[in-house]
Length: 384
View 1 (cartoon, rainbow, N blue to C red):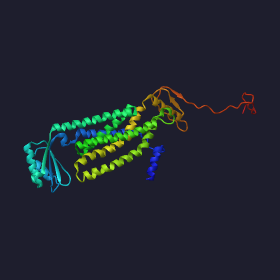
View 2: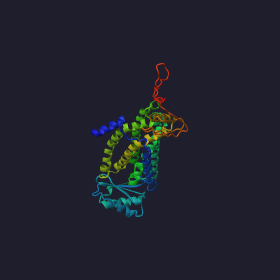
View 3: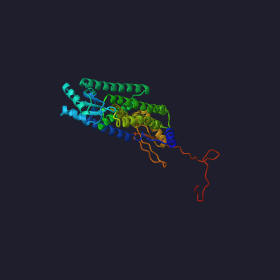
View 4: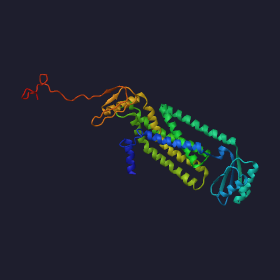
């Protein structure tokens, strides 16, 4: 624990750290690959929409002596042998939920009777409900509308708070990254997408946005006077801010993941609580993706956009030139200034350069009268 605390202190003071800005292409590639795979899964496999979104019939059998799914599947197949496979899940310790495609009233009554017979319970222990396609479409529309309103409000608030639209763009890219990856995991796992899942998606957006705002606020603090400073570039000041908030982000994510993991792996997968499973998977994946994007995606993207500004580009060139004592670009937006201990040549990408030369410190001896002091002659008439 002491070593971890020392590591955190070193990150905050800048003694050690991860150069997130210099290696940003690596983080971009990782994010692009994950998003690309998620999009492919969504296009090829799709999402397992719940009955609330697609419409259909639902049956609940209570006080069953066994939670086996075989009697439920056999009951549905006996009535609609050519229909879509039913979705069967356990609710609590002694209840079964069966979801099917839309059935007629006659088919619904037949399935309810077959379920009661299959589980050996009275007919009154089997309840049925129907969700129409129009209601499912309304749920989908409302979910997308809520997501859109959240994104718009987040962009406006970030732009007003940080007084720059570039932070809003970087934060929104991170949010899209988190949503797409979480949806891709749902497509891969086959978990059902229900209204509880939508709540989980909105929750992870709020978490990711909160984590990103904390990092951005530290970046703003570190870069507030960077243009008047000749010791650090904008990228270096932002990188220090990311390292200063890295331990906080990790600690917050771990603390948030512990209860979510308990709900997902113990409460949902082992105990079979369907609603908990629907929301906990979104939270679990979203927190991990949000932590990554708030540290390794949004800050480098913001710095990348800011470095294109002329003032920041010129300040960067001056700082690098002062360190290298070599060529200083006077035109062009970027320059690579490098100078080794032996005075290696510097390269620039500008069209013209001004070379900084150190004045000579060697002084010519002078005589007391103000003229140059004459040197004694060597034998043969030559001066020493």
